[in-house]
Image (cartoon, rainbow, N blue to C red; front, side, top):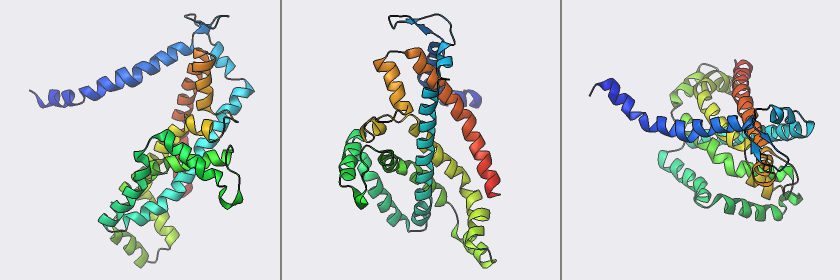
Length: 266
């Protein structure tokens, strides 16, 4: 068999998985977003832009804005904590770093729902005398607890490949710690930071259980909004339109954030 066809055969399982389980369902969501709903709540195959017009309502805009702020805050907080800790782990001997990573991953051997309920018990102790249960601060801390490893592991994988002699050479040449980070370490590890940010930001946008349980459902985030549209009010066109809008927003926002970060650090 020709080598070209051998390579094509190797990517065939991924292509089947991508088209039938990712692209296909998303195309159905796009199609559903242009449907209408009759007075009995049944979805009708009639083309309409009504669902997208409904998204312009200030109520729905507040939901999107609140969700974006929560996702951005949890992403930045995870990166802020994970980067220095990942750098510390990357300078340790391999066997010691592996033990730290194993300790971090042990809680994730349990069910996601059980971890949230256990974290709720921690918040009920009111650490530092602050009430965090059913508050946005508690939701943010729960997001940090559950998504921090998603930022830590890519950053550690990137930082452990950085040769210590490069950093030592920069220090010997008179560079300050800030210059070493901005001019040496950041350009090398920038791709890992973006990967870690995406792994936290994307699932944070659609998070449902944490705001519903830790936040008590007091504030409507996107995950709660989608659950309500698809399972409670059965307004599938509006829920599908919200998903399409969010995907388009993420596709335009993330490259812009990447470029702004590059400009700020160069």
